[in-house]
Amino acid sequence: MHQTLTLLGIESSCDDTAAAVVRLDDAGPKILSSEVMGQTALHAAFGGVVPEIAARAHAERLDGVVGDALARAGVGLGDLDAIAVTAGPGLIGGVLSGVMLARGLAAATGLPLIGVNHLAGHALTPRLTDAVAFPYLMLLVSGGHCQFLAVEGVDRFRRLGGTIDDAPGEAFDKTAKLLALPQPGGPAVEGEAATGNPARFRFPRPLLDRDGCDMSFSGLKTALLRARDMLVAAQGGITRQDRRDLCAGFQAAVAEVLAVKTERALGMADLPFTALCVAGGVAANQTIRAGLEAVAGQAGLPFVAPPLRLCTDNAAMIAWVGIERLRAGLPVVEDFVARPRWPLDDRSPSLLGSGKKGAKA
Ligand code: KG4
Ligand code: ZN
Image (cartoon, rainbow, N blue to C red):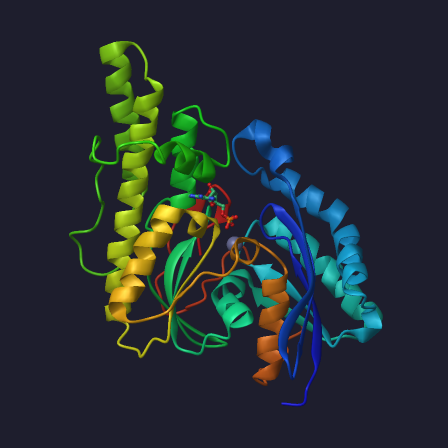
């Protein structure tokens, strides 16, 4: 290959305003910059992401974040080959903020504009970080998403299954709320669980008895609520150790469900997978990771978890999808529309409902 591609990526589909510059040359891909400006403080008082507040913050901050990404990369607009922007799925006001900015930049510079599926960004990240070859299995587990994808090509994804209700991150966040722990709930619950007894409370493992790799996590939080309330009724409150044990029991249930369903997903696709990959904020959880790593080991596959800053929402993954699409010779469709829902796999039935962080794809 003797083609150098330098792309600006823009991401604003949830509560992170992000821009990045990624370059691909003979030496491989390089992230020249990746700026992420979170909005946790703006939404903290509301117990979840407020779409209108998110959209306004993106609109106010995007040009500054893009400017920072270009400056840090030492790249001017004239050095770019194209612009890639998240066109969905996500909170539509935020997606539109990014798409409008990107359209303006593309019109002013004459650069091609590539509308990217946010989930493709997560799904193709193992190729940016670890040059993983197709086909591989991707488990995407975050606050808004939970699905198994057979990644067969730059534009070929097969959804093998996913959650039918809450995403695991959402369940961690709700658990934290029920136990008066801080948000985001994942790290807080993991911290408590470290000194808890996972065997004291036996929480349900939903859908384990059912074929396939669909999952359900909403019943888990109800079971936790019931266990907490029983303790409160019996002893007038919960002790610190009760809380640690509840967290450990909850985490063990999530980890087991994810591990068992991952094993099933590996077998379901009937593809010569090259790796088991994981992305999303929940992938930071050491117990969950250990479970998945063991499944990969048993299947004789490498376990690939990109560094956390590339597992969670960022714009380098969006620029990377643009590069992959250009490199594969896929046509650039300039008149794309912003989409709140955009399943990667059109053949899979769409799931109803909306998560805390937007529509479930
Ligand atoms: O991927 P992410 O940063 O954002 C999106 O949802 O798009 O994921 C955030 C989610 C939150 O729900 C957070 O509680 C969860 O990931 N999370 C964790 C851990 N760190 C973050 N869940 C379990 N264990 C963790 N250590
Ligand atoms: Zn995401």
